[in-house]
Length: 440
Ligand code: EPU
Image (cartoon, rainbow, N blue to C red):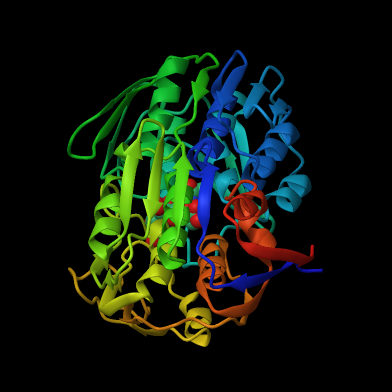
């Protein structure tokens, strides 16, 4: 049965919550542990489904994983890495895109790897061509079979030159995780340089890798033969922090997010302020609040770092339904990330989506048939509705809308939120939300 949350909206969210390590870093650091000849320890690991999935995948590959949930400490012993059963990997990987990143470490350790059918959020086609091309250029052979891709490395992989057609986060991580133990130099041009990637570089450096990052998005890796384990504290989750910030704004509330980090959220904070939100930076927290009065409409474009993250877009759009005038949001990272706006329209929001690149430069989706620009006209009161959660960030945005709306909503499929938001029910209770799980 699908999980259903009943929400009585229209109350400001107020209180303090804590975010721990970033989902989109922790899962990659867990894969990096596979490269270590000694155990690794990762701190600030949140209790989210993606961590569960990657722990399970590591276990299937012979890694001993011990997780102290309360302390957020994850220990991984990779002394006995072995190939996993493909059916088990396929059964396990359905909800995650991380299995593709196992390739480099497994090819290095075992000479073989397997990529199952990948899951993840339905926000665009999500091809893996950059990954496959990169792995091939390191010398891996790839065979597509019915249940996934089978990869082999005849001997040690060889350093290579890669230029990404787009600064993909996953393909940059793929290159890093493969290049660190490949023979010789690898040069990656047009790399992604998000803070989560820089933290992965820090982990790999602790393990013994030699990696330099240039200002022009070129990453150079000098391969080494062997790496040790690491001990590392994960950077905090700036997507979760921004999601709660958007919730504070949309509900007219006041939320202090312990663990939120200003340096990684500069771009979000600028936009939050332009919309009319207020914040106070503390040593290890940021307080986000609605200062009263009306909110401002804005023109916004998502982009790779240091631009405005695509994952911040969906929660913020909910707040923009409460801003005065016309806001324009141009999504340039994923071609199909406005599907969630239908539910907002059903709740009373005035949002139109367009194929054209609005309000910014022409992006790679401009000449195609993708509704990747949105015009939001506000403020419009939101009213409770029955909503079905589409994906992780879209789902959290629906939750925010239900919390901001007058009246009762039921949010079906709410369990998806557990993929990336730790203890969200406990946090909602701490923020004085009127919610009740009616089916789980
Ligand atoms: N792309 C290709 N070919 C590839 C790889 C990517 O065309 O082989 C395209 C994608 O289709 C997309 C763009 O490149 O249009 C960027 O994709 P990227 O590879 O950067 O995304 P990802 O690594 O699959 C990660 C996060 C996403 C986040 C994006 C962008 C993880 C596990 N996922 O995905 O997070 O939206 O980067 O910032 O790190 C989420 O947390 O909800 C989430 C979806």
